[in-house]
Length: 436
Image (cartoon, rainbow, N blue to C red; front, side, top):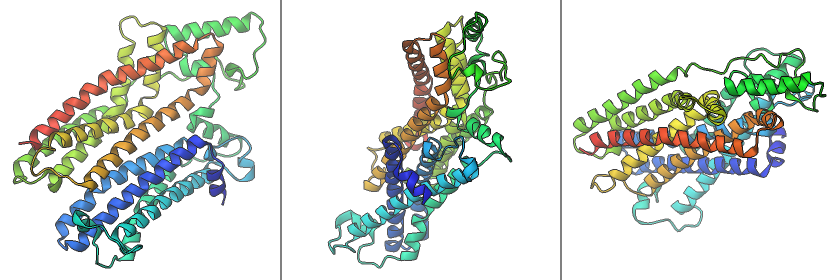
């Protein structure tokens, strides 16, 4: 009941993200039911198993998007006083998982209704033509099998949310709220130097300005971030991560293996369509995993390159933010690059006679592309929430709003310059062996 009340009383933007999760779950559920219908019409296990294996790609994209939405949900975020009434991080994690399961279950129910409507089980007017191949019109639908397939998305999404938002270690008393704030960075109260203190010349200027205001005898303003944590030094703080994430070498290796598997599939596929070759599916999956693993490291490298050759305050700010948020932004950005390269490969193979076509392929591509793009935008919202306290501190120190906007535009442009050509190169390397 508490999860339902939090769902009903959320902000319209949060409700919109949840509706997108419902739509993604409905699309994935319809694809799973279509694979079941194809298995009823074609008893051969190989083609049906391959269709079901292709459904794991949109299901993974849906689960990833559901986790991103749950991480930015303010209704299930720890706040002061909730632990006193029994709503600590563990209980709120359960509420987030229940809310995600409720949204995905609603989408699965919608998919079942649409599937039954197209089959003619509700109105008695089924679709004709090629749709009969995956709707299994005129054949009884095994309800236990359909419900089992529809339960995959809610169970997987709720389990992924529970793992992502689980409490990191035992916490008691006042430390519980503090660690919860650290995990949901938007409510973290830290000194100014903790976020930008190690940012070189720009950080030293900010620290000097803050020290000059305090030593001049000015009373601290209400909510001053340098005074909100008693006993902390405003000039000390953990350094900004300078070492790149460890996934870059692994990502490059997995990407190379995926391209090699695609080349092997082009030689041993016997002229079949790429969608009908399990080795091609494995190669595309490895390519996507490689780009996702390399995304944080490439984002960190992009932030470092912004600070080379005598940077000013604007480039320092943009580069350090990219380095700090490399893991949060880089992984969904790498997934988006993988999806775009796969879409480019499908578009290049569209004119082939053996190229896969049909409404289910279009639905799958649209679903995966929409989920990955929405996940990237949601991660950007989470990163903006994590920088809320730092942004307020910079504005108090005299940073203009236009400067912060130019820094954001510079970050976006730098990521586009790095990841755009990379996506095209990976797409061309993926098309070359499959088009032979």
